[in-house]
Image 1 (cartoon, helix red, strand yellow):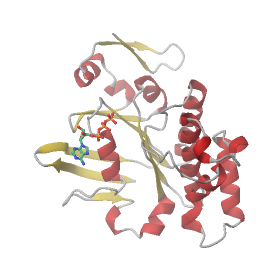
Image 2 (cartoon, protein in one colour):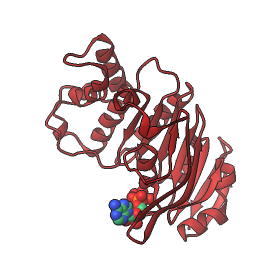
Image 3 (cartoon, rainbow, N blue to C red):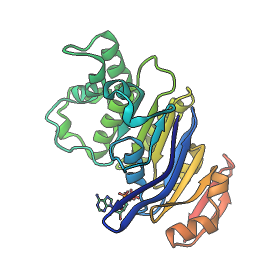
Length: 257
Ligand SMILES: Nc1ncnc2c1ncn2[C@@H]1O[C@H](COP(=O)(O)OP(=O)(O)OP(=O)(O)O)[C@@H](O)[C@H]1O
């Protein structure tokens, strides 16, 4: 799905990303974790072709992502950004419909309306559809953007890819699980997702692979069991932790302190 080799990204003398390799298969849920400033958002921006770093090529479906037709690409991949605008003078349903812009010229068709309604329902914002976006709470706004991004990838294309930068911000516990369930179900249909997460226990529970970053580099990569060792985590976060086995899922469970 996506392959990038030795990504380097510098600002003056500061290495934001330093020799990062990423490889993602169809159907994979990859969580990028690491402390503040580790380079997670920057890596996501490079992989999504929002930032170009020079010579390195990001291959998306075996073709350099920079060579894709922009409109065509927007039907294959979508990005949920960490900093969504707080000021969008539109109703909720119109914000979600923005995800369908690649599919119609002047008026949305039946499929666009269906995608909009289905995704508003999935993300629990359907009851807010006629509200002014600007009057919503932080968590409600997050769900509207998840709905928009999901609506963008409602199509017949096999193997689509979603980038999500901290999609759980402001969400209560039920909606955190609901959002991760939606993303997981999306990947179980042979689509892929790269998700920046801060909650390591949720990453352990939902992700197939973990990429742990520290200071612009990959400090560990593999399954949750491989990456979430006390040594790896304490080293990356400079904070002590103990690893147990989750009594129900058997995934690693991280207890800090
Ligand atoms: N355009 C830029 N110019 C200068 N420094 C930058 C730029 N973009 C990012 N950085 C720096 O690069 C580092 C990585 O930033 P990035 O936002 O990728 O981190 P992150 O891991 O997503 O952090 P957080 O968990 O806090 O969101 C930070 O120290 C940031 O200040």
